[in-house]
Amino acid sequence: MDLTTYGCGGSLAETEMRRGAGLDPVPYESESKVVTGERRLPRENRLEGTLSNVSSLTIDTTEACLSLRSVAYDITTDRSVSITLSDGRTLELSGAGRHQGTLPAARLRLRVSPRRVPAGTRTRFAFRVTAEGRPLSGATVRLAGARTRTNARGRARLRLRLRRARAYTARASKDGLGARARVRAVASQRAPRFTG
Image 1 (cartoon, rainbow, N blue to C red):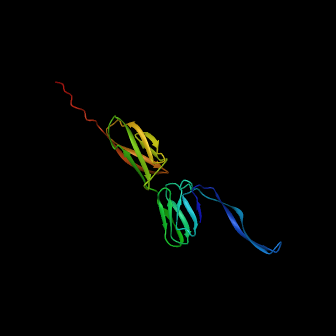
Image 2: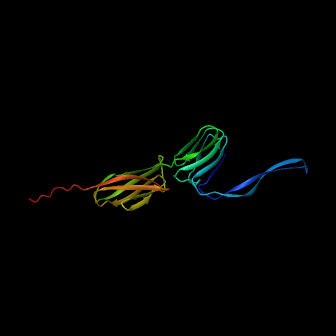
């Protein structure tokens, strides 16, 4: 298995195979790799490499510096391979050969509770953000000018007052991707005043 992620940028050593032979102290043949330089890796959402004797693997997107955006790939395999990214996306490479393409960006989803509140009342809102159905940590959630970040379970809370009776939009974002959910603040029903 030899996979390279471009997500972190940096450089990759270029090597050359060298062979040798001799008679002293005994007859021998040698093979070695010598570093001849380095190749700069541009920082981008990309995977390249070769997979041998592997039918499935999981890649930690945080460690590989891969964001939720689309991931370009150029991978050569000797069999069918299933690659799962830790954010929930899956790449199925069928058959042996060279596979090139782009894995689509992750889909974010935002849930908010409650979705309907009395206008002018201080309310505690609970948010849940997922990417491909899995909790998303570190997403920014905004509602009515306030903001917070999700924890490791993809959850966040805000306590605020929606002053006007109208529809508000809650937004979640990470890595340039986003999701929305609507919250409605309704006018409170006042009891008729008796003047009698």
